[in-house]
Image (cartoon, rainbow over all chains, first blue to last red; front, side, top):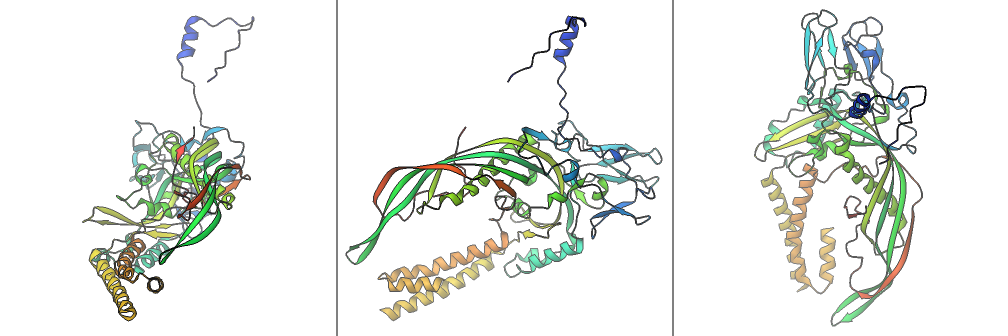
Length: 416
Length: 91
């Protein structure tokens, strides 16, 4: 790490005193965010309709625009892609560029935010863990969290819901309907797709450019022949062995990573892979933050920082590089075994976003497992986990097995 | 498919292998239905579903040896198609 030396004092200005020098040395360097995404027009926590000034503002699902419930005016925030130039200059990124909404979460940040209502002066409390707007119970103004508080609740951008609740319910019903025969009887009894929740889940969307390196061994078949061994014939192969080196440089645009630790852990103890599967979203259409997009929906707070997700990014970049070099391995018809790999992330840009999901959850008590059926509220992609009735499944397997065994027995008897 | 395997096996001279058809078919049925309901194997295919611009692949290969006779039809530990199986990291 090189440090720049301060320029020598010019003869005109007096040299700083010792106390001043010590003070300067103690002061921590201020590091402003690389991209400032705060929506300045909404500073005071009141999102007014630009036409009539009412704060009764909601997202209109069918158009994806904000609508004033008072005068029916519709408008939308600007797309962050153009506003902050997120679609360009990925190759020129240097180091880690972090937008203001993706900055580190302060450890002592509270979930609850208290507002002074601009309408009547009353104090209104918002619990940002689940919601980012609240109504003042005195004057009915809607107050929103618009300033980026250091607890990870306010991202840089939001992708509004596009699928209505009815469409979400229909997709969940269809998904479960195709999986009825072997479903757990209690799941079928308690299946109420109308209980679906519209949730904004936190993600970090990354642009990056990287160089990946792979080393391994490959084999090319040179000959194939069969030899008789008594009654059997055995096939043999001869092959050339090669040492294989591959390198590829690539740019990824809008790689989407889970920003909540509860969702990011995937394994047999949960069904988080279901929510992961409904990616990707059309993140290019994300708009600048306005808490009115969240009215009527719940939200989950981000609790992972960029540093926590760097290993995940590198892992995904390594996989992407592997898939990129695969086409160059055709000559190794006996396959390639990679033995070592490396990735050098030249530069990355991180933007925090809320992405919309219709989520139906069912808790299976005997297994203590939470099953999700999730619908991507932009593309409609649906994936889910339906609890199975193991006795029924066992019976089906036994039936098929017995049937096949019967055929096998018949063939044996016929050929004897 | 199972039937084809069984017929093929019967044409071999090892008819008793046929008796494995029942247990294997039963286990496969169990596994396939379970996977269809629980989708435990699914995840986001980011290698394919992300906007990626890659430069041409660079690299080299060097012949290091020869296998004169083996019964294996492929290299052992082939992981060229398993992009998410991590190997030793180069620093």
